[in-house]
Every structure is written in structure tokens, then in C-alpha cells.
Amino acid sequence: MEHKLPELPYKKDALAPLISAETFEYHYGKHHNTYVVNLNKLIKGTEFEKMELDAIVKKAKGPVYNNAAQHWNHSFFWNCLRAKQEPELDEGFMLLINKSFGSLGELKAKFSEAALGLFGSGWVWLVDNGNETLSIISSQNAGNPLVEGKKPLLVLDVWEHAYYIDYRNKRADYIEAFWTLINWEFVMHNHMDAKK
Ligand code: MN
Image 1: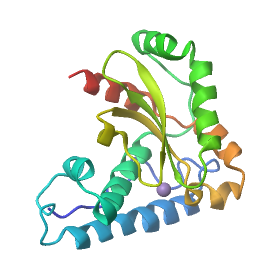
Image 2: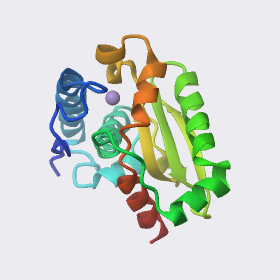
Image 3: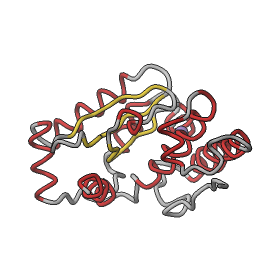
Image 4: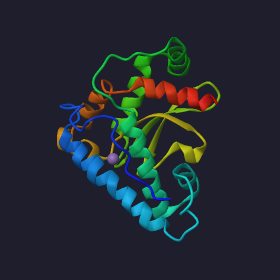
């Protein structure tokens, strides 16, 4: 199957100034697009050609894995964001956060620490472990928790290309902005989906 760059779930300037339209032009329009183009080239004539993206991410290694996972991760990341708003968390999901981390503040502190501490390029995830607990996972480069059998709920891209235009070297400021841009409805939807 031909993989396609998904539509962004908002306009390129919707998250400005925290994430600018110029960042989306490069991060979505060039970086993400390149992973999709490369993936389509790499799978042609291979066992992966007819597989769904999730299945490729779980099975492939090397360049096919890298481009498939980067396509998956970015598609997921765009959906984790929306224009600045107050967090609205269901009581049930908040209880799960409290059970796993102590409080939403602790989740944020641990997630931010992981995002700041990740050396080089990678992703930081909130995942559902499948036993009514949540965890934070850091993954290098094109890492994806599906490979470990965990269900992603939320992700932050900490590759330099994600923040260099808006924040230069200040990854901490980008992480701070992230907390005001999270689409919690999407996160809770992913949690409900994980229970199926
Ligand atoms: Mn990226």
C-alpha cells in the first residue's frame, strides 16, 4: 500500500507562536514527508509492501523500521497537539494518573525530566502498560513503544528539528510550551482504545 502524509489536524499557524507555521513547514512538510517518501521507496517489492503501518513498525528492522516508525510517530505527535487550552481530564483518567504518578504535576515533572535528559534525538512517551498503570518511556531516534507491546497515549518529539526554529537550543522552553498544547481528549481516547 502507498503510505501518505496525513492532513494536519489544524492549520500550520494554529499553534503559533509556541510552534510556528515555519516549524510545521519544515517539520511536517519536509521531515515527515521525507520519511513517507523513503518508506514507500524502501518497501516496494518487499514483504512489507502490503502491510499496514502498525505491522511494519512491529516487524521491520533497519531503514524500513526507521522510516515507518518516524512516519507513525509524527502522525501520532500531530494529533497529540491542539491550540492552547486548559487541560480537561476525566475523573477516571485523573485517578489513573494519580495511581501511576501521584499527581498530574508529578507526571509532568517526570515527563519533562525525561524529555530534557534524553541525549541526542528521540521521543518521550506516556504509555499504557495494559495493567491499569501508565508509564513514561524515552526512546532514542525512531523508537516506538508498540515494539515493546505498550500502547502509546501521548508523545513529545525531542529531535532538534522539532524545536530549533522556534527555540534554538532551548529544549526546556519547548517542553514548557508543550504542556499548554496537549490534546487531552486524544490522550484519553487512546487510553479507552487500549482497553479494547
Ligand atoms: Mn520530528
